[in-house]
Length: 458
Image (cartoon, rainbow, N blue to C red; front, side, top):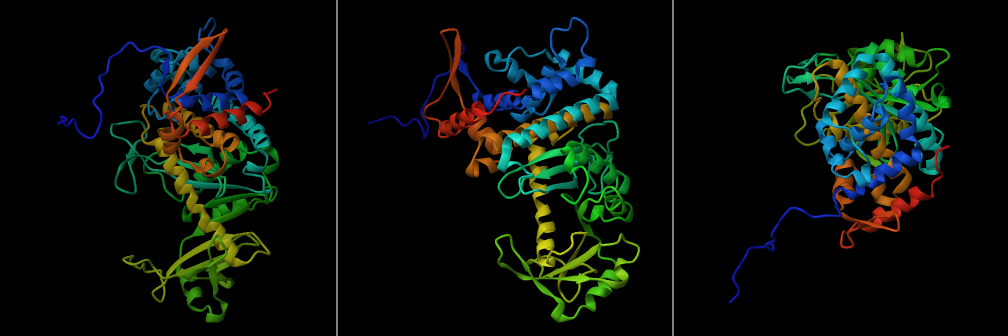
């Protein structure tokens, strides 16, 4: 009779193992840094902040923190996971050195932030060229989604305040380039704001849009090929006027608050003017119709603006609002895109919901909390989070195919980055032998082959 030991085998553990590398899949991010030239760009940008006779390059220190965040870290001290694997990640600075660099960059203010942002913009343009048909501008248009994020603070931090959801923390305004249904998205703006910052503050939306446009290749910084999408927080006169200003001519799709004028205009729309809403696959959306409003509702708004309203049966259990009509939930969107059916324009705006996926990925990549005390330090942390998110977007765009390109950070960490390997030194070469039994080893090796086939940065 065999003695029962439970569902799982009993394994003895002891320290002292050699040649074993955990988080071996992180080499995908390391190769992405190398092939995109991000290391050289960040190093050159932070050159003015390198102290004489310094041992560690500031660019390498900052990139190490970004890599740690991309692998799942949520504070500066988590860079220790890279320090334990020098054969893969090279020499890593100590925790005090990392903290001093963040303090130095925070003291640098706008100059340091501008240097980092310009380096990211330069690399982003090169990455999109490398990606080819997989780039977010492959269809000739770039879509930027702006949305606010509530970040809860569990201690007294500078600018932390009560939020509109009755929590305590900060309310950053983020911007993401949408990669469409076949990809994820990459951050292009992160404006740190107090927790009590308004959701519809036009000045903040304008600043976030400026930051986002500065991250795009020059040909997309103005003109109709760039679409700015926001929720109703961006539906203000000042922001829409800024988007439609002469010389800027940006396309926009912004949510609008259902005012009394819009509500009464909807009640006057004849039944024949309503068009069935559509789904991404072209099928009719059940229980939803769209119509275009005109007349007094457009007075005072920029020329060429179109106002599209959707009425839809609410989901079971949903409560109607005072602005709803005839038992239908009303939503409204303003756009300046002409000669396009209103059903397509409403669907395009509805796809702004992908920004919520980008926010979820950001929360899982260092934005769950702001770990530092001063606002200037936390703004540097936001830049580090953006670099980590850039890497998590660029690596799939350049190296992964099929469903794997749509994996969010949590799944990338579980399936790819957490893979174990054996480090072998032979013939003056270091070879990382990935575990043969790992289900996604072939995905990692094929992705590394695609990265290796890319040209080296100039």
